[in-house]
Length: 550
Image (cartoon, rainbow, N blue to C red; front, side, top):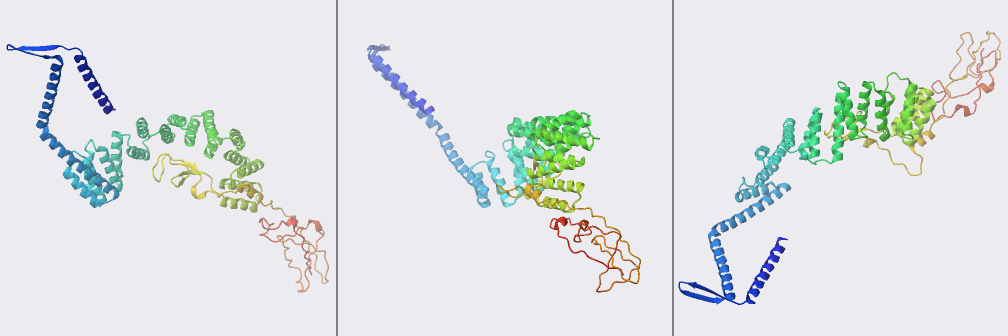
C-alpha cells in the first residue's frame, strides 16, 4: 500500500512540475538583476529553469557528501548484518538438530552461533545449549542454564519450565511445585504452570487457592467459559464435602454454587441435600435431589432421596421411590429404586414386576442380583436363585465412578492415578462392556426371563406312620404302602430277618390312596430344584415297592 502511494505521489509531482512550467511559458516576461553596477537580464522561463537546476545540483552534492561521510558505518553495518544472518542460520540449524536428537550437530551449531552472535544479545543460544546438554545427558549443566534463563526477564518462563521438568524427573515434587506456582503467579496464562499448580493445590485440599487460580485462568482466556465453570463447580463440590461435618451452612452454600455452574453434578446435589438434612430442612433437600434426578437419574440420588428422613418405615420409603419413578418414568434407575424399596417393604409382587421391567430395559449385574434377593425372600427356590446368580455373573457391571481406568466406590474431585481434575465419570468400566445385541433378537433380559425355571414344590405330602403287627410264627400278608425316598421306614428290632428271595412287607391300619402317592427321585432329601431335572408332577409313576415283615 505504501509503494502505491509513493508512485502516485511521484506522478502527481511530475504533473504539477510540468503544469507549472507550462503556466510560466504562457506568460512571458523578463527578469533582471543589478549587482555592482552590472545588470543581468534574462527571460523568466530561463531563470526558473536555472533555479530548479541549482536546487537539484545542491541536493545531489549533499547526497554524495553524506554517503562519503557515513560510508564507514554503512560498510561496518553491512558486514555485521551478514555475520548475524550466518549466526541465525547456524542457530536455526542447531535448534532443528536438537529437536531431532542430533546432539553432535546441535553442539557444533551452538558453538558456531556463539562465535557469530553474542550470547547476551540472543537468548536462544542458551536454549540451544540447554537442549544439547539434555540430549547428551548432562543434566547438571542443563539445570544451570535453565537457572540462568529464569533470572532473565526475557527467558524467565522458559527457564522455570525447564527447572520444573527437571525437578519432576528427579522426583523432587516439592521443588517442582514451587517452580510451577512461581510461573503460575507471574503468568497464569501458561497452561502447564496453571495445570500443575491446580493439581498440587487440589491434592493438598487448598480449594480456595485453586478456585482463585482458576478464576485467573478464566480472565486470561486460557480456558473456555464452559470448561472453567465445570472445573469451578467440581472444586466447590470438593470444598463442600470438606465443610459438611464442621460447617453445614457453608457446605450448603458451596454445593448450591456448584449446582448453578453445573446443574447435572450429582455429588454437589448429594452434599447440598445432606447439608439441608443437617439443618432439618427436608423439603429443600428433597427439592434439590428431585431437580437433579430429572436431569440425570442416578442410584446415589435415589438412595439419598429415599433415606433422607431417619425413622421412615419401609412403606414410606416405597412411596418416595414411587415419586421418583413418577418424575422419570420408564427409566432403569427409577424401576430399580422402586424394586429395592418394595423388597424392603415385603411387597414381592411389585418388587418382581419392577425388577423384571428394569431387566428388559438393561441387562445388568445389579438387576439380576436384585431378582435373586427377591426370589430368596419370596420363594426360597434355590434353582431360581442360582438362575439369577448365573445371569448376574454373565451380565456386564452397572456404571460406576471411573477415572483413568480406576474404578472407585465414591466420587472424588481428582484422579488418584494422574491427579487430573474432574476425571471421574459415571460410566460402565471398559473391561465389562456387554457384547452387541443383534437387531430384531430378544434382549438379554427377555432371554433370562424366558429361561427362568418354574417354582419347585417344597412341601411333601405327609407320610402315614406305620404300625407294626405283633410278630407271630405265621407269615401274615399285609397291605403294602409306598415308602417315600426322603422318609425311609425305621427298622423294627422285633421283626424277623427277611428271606433273601422274599421282599418284606409293612402293614398299616389304613392304606394310602394311590392318587396321593408321589414318586420322586432322591435329590438331597427334597424335591428337585435344578432347572434341568424333570418336574415331578409330570413324571410317570414308578412301580410301588412292597415290603414284607415276618
